[in-house]
Length: 196
Image 1 (cartoon, rainbow, N blue to C red):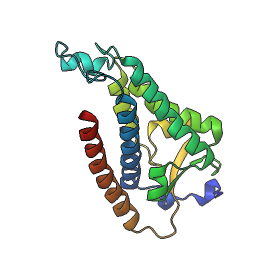
Image 2: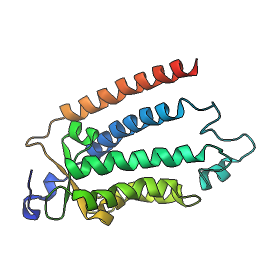
Image 3: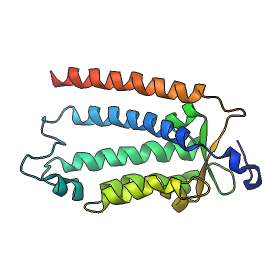
């Protein structure tokens, strides 16, 4: 799908609620993948040691975790998930289900370079010790301050998320939320089975 900048008017920009639904779906996929990666390791992998305060953990996500390298591995998987899909299709699974697409300033798919920059911002920000949680929050909330409804990763990569459906109905959003609920149930069942 080729869209010139003039053809992406304000009403074609993706609604914030649809972007949220797509993020929730992709987040569920990420959570399942992370659970599978953590499964072979001891129960204390990825948990917070009891002697650390919540402030210490908030400021340093790796504090006291001997399996910190698993978090780095999962961040790399997270990066690859977004990078490859945005470069090839302009859409992740969540965006496809919600009828959204990431495009560059020229209206094309962002390509390998643009998709890499866009995909790197969020996992890199969340993996930063000390400033990570604050920077991640700023990255997500930027969408409310940008007139083109872009998060900080869109602004840095020079991308925008558009709505690809001719006539938007709520069915895509409802399907996405239904999928999210079903996936959450499956994730809970998977975690119960793995805990045995």
